[in-house]
Length: 159
Picture 1 (cartoon, helix red, strand yellow):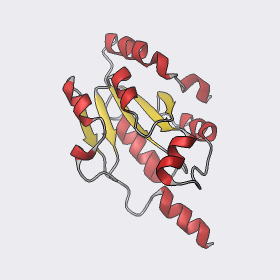
Picture 2 (tube, rainbow, N blue to C red; picture 1 turned 180 degrees about the vertical axis):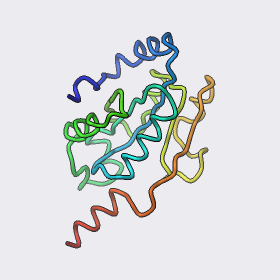
Picture 3 (cartoon, rainbow, N blue to C red; picture 1 turned 90 degrees about the horizontal axis):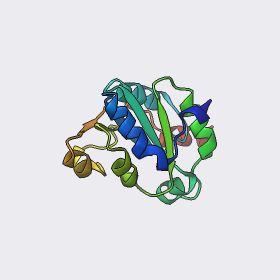
């Protein structure tokens, strides 16, 4: 199932062009999505509601390890992609192994860049300047209080 939603980065520019010709408002977000939880699901549904098409960029395994440490990810990229693809709110998935997805933003040029409430200031969002440079918008969504992958891992370790 996820293969239908998975798009390779080389195709992002042509996808963007096609969607813009159709008049679709494209929303972009990214993350690890290591252990999918209610906070992720609510966030992704809210992100999709901001436009017509939601593209989610997913950190690759080496990217997560470099950001979160050698014990992460818990779930492999392939498993995370398959779980995310099961969500109806996601139209496309792309993976990346760099620390940030800025190059994907340049290829896709989304209308809206969405990030979660773990960011406190919209000015801290990587890619904000680029998205705004061509007239796109940046949006912060609220985090579900007390729900995070890190808190779930801590809870599992204590059991």
